[in-house]
Image (cartoon, rainbow, N blue to C red; front, side, top):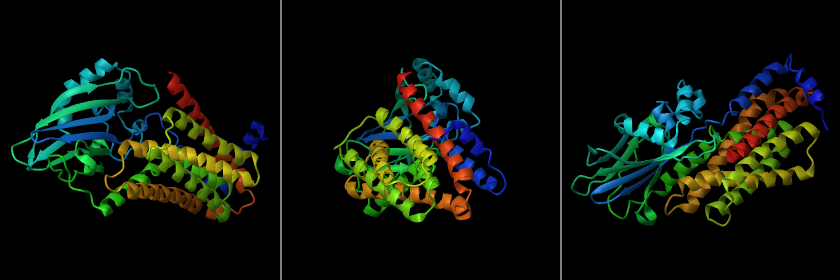
Length: 391
């Protein structure tokens, strides 16, 4: 068992040749350490009838009200309007809803529904702000919007401004081939036909969309998964044991991702998310206390992979699988996740492992200090997620 004084002594060894490596570690770790105001895609359900379109959008309303540009950022603390965001977050549900109604003329200009080349006037029919929400979680509110459609059968196109961030668009009431899209950087949807049936999405475009979605869930949005993978990397930069652990992790989260998506397994996120944080802390603890990989570590990594698969499923479950291409979409998402994880490993190896992995002081000056920082972040997230549910 390593004592804190020994950890402190080892941290003081950060000098000379290893200082550059540690600077890179600090960037990798602390760039992923803030989650209190983490952004995530909005979710929009679009119901297109013959004469009217109904749009329901789930999102934290504080960001658009504060005029934060969400295009390309993953945490509202990084925005110049972070203080204003916190002030809006402190408002009661009725006060925030009233502010949305007051600001609707500006907000509605950022949302576009078109039919036949004509932009449709939008009516705000409801603002549902949850009254009770954990203080460390985003406050997801619901905007209900309605628009009258012009005569005829011209298709409908949806878009919103890039500064509102990414959005998952799902067509409802259109049967098994309803349109689904993940829109980023202000991109518009494909034309969506009126009536009960939408044009089927091609297999190729569906595969690529979910591939990108899986990758983005790791880079830049998968902060907890990035730290877990980095924890595996710092314990051993040798290729074979690292690949064994990554393979075990991949096999495990593939199993639970599939089981959860198809409804075989269901575990509340309130249980999964704290345990994921705890898995990060445990892997870091082993990195500090063990000097070599034990056979049972692979089984531990596999068990934690099962947890992380449930975490992936919570994201993919919100978005849903592409109609008609469910298995292909699941496979593409998982491949995207793997590409993201391997990218993290390759980046870490290129910046640190290739230069310092074989140095006699690698463990004392790099692996242990980096694992201490990763472990502290994991413990912090565990406590934050538990307290957030109690508060």
